[in-house]
Image (cartoon, one colour):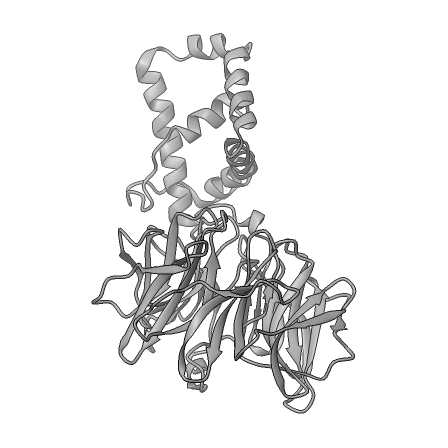
Amino acid sequence: MTDERVDALIRSLGVASRPDPAFRPDPAFVERSYAVLLPRARQARQRDRQALGRLLASLALRRAPAQAQLLQGLRGTMALALLLMLILALLAGIAVVGALRQADFGENGLLTVSDGGALQTIDAETSEVRTIIEGDSPLIGLSRSPDGRLVTFWTGGRTGERLEVANVDGSGRRQLAPDMNLVRRGCIDVWAPDSRRLAAEVTQDRVPLLLVVNVETGAATSVAPAEGLAECPLWSPDGQWLAFAHVRVGAPRSLAIIRPDGSGEREVSGDLDGLNVSGPNSWSSDGRWIYFDAQGGSVGHVYRADVAAGRSEQLTPDGLHAYAPALSPDGTRVAFTDGTDLYVMAADGTSVRRVLERALNNGWSADGRYILAEWHPGPDSANWGLVAVLPDGGEPKMLLRFEPDCLGRASASCLDGVGWGQAQP
């Protein structure tokens, strides 16, 4: 039972996320069966994501020479119903015996995290955690490339900070922009979509600017607006622009864009009624929208700016103080937080719903199927940690547990950096 017919049969079943307690098959049998079925299920899911794969699977079903014999061997609808019940019982038992196995995380690549003293990788599929780099000085400002191969970070103290890059296994560690006297400031560095360039918010010889680094060569060039400061850069989907928070004396922080060579600067946020832009968070794949939050006193909302029109529209309702938005990779949904709980809404601001209580938003997985969150359910809970949660809710998948006293730091976060190939909110 390992051909396309079984794949089709399994995909046709609707299995509840929490099985009936009456289904409790032998655990050893469940684990052996899971080991056999899991590779087949992963292959079927991968084929189903592609039109060609779905077509080939359908043709294989129609051409299978043994199909007639199988149907004849099933003695009517009662035999088919019995087979379905057996498979349902097996899948229900797997959910009871095993840990939460929501889907295949493999295509997202390794998740990278920093707790300040070391860099670690997490295999979200197996929950394996590996320390890849340890240092005598803090390692902060972590950012992983979209292709999953590289990780950048900052080391050193305030008198001599270094921007470094390494392979995701910790090898090939080297300094970027080695001839520049740099100090990191503000927002997390962001990768260009091609995984070859990095944009960082720095001061060079005490002058604030944006730094664009060629990660392959280590060479860097500086970018600055004609007036004021640029903070929190974000690459456009085509890699031709940088969005940033524009800071000017006597004016609210606005949203602007500029080319990596310093040309083409212009404002795109429009009138925000005196609110200050925190920084650009996500840029839609079609290049039209930039998602961001703007704050002022006790008021804060998630907005999106129409880049071509140079104006913005408020997305979150007036009664909700919202910030840290992140657009899903497919451009259909936005995750954000109100400072306490994790929310999701449609990309146009409709269908707002709470996904997870007491959680901070850390953005989406590369495939857009999960939201990464720091979950703090309470001091008496054992579930303090970094989790992946489905945007439609459900039980979170624990990826990394935190120490109970981690929130005793000055920061509201238990981590100094998280990287999964997407810009962090």
